[in-house]
Length: 89
Image (spheres, rainbow, N blue to C red):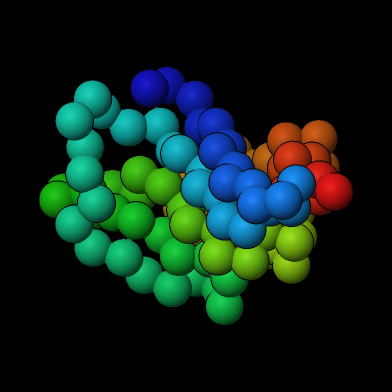
């Protein structure tokens, strides 16, 4: 996978959890996690490369907080439109 994408889980029309898949190789699995923010947990593969970000409180996460984490990982920022599904319902 070459580009990041967001997957959101909803319950009764409201986002309850989300995961931002980061660029990764096929077959990469999470081997270690690190809390980057109270609502953001980074998953790393066996080689230590970031492969995803768990968003544990989707309605609380801001573009600023998510971009701070992405910048720290050396990844491109997201826009408000990219995370619009987190604001659903």
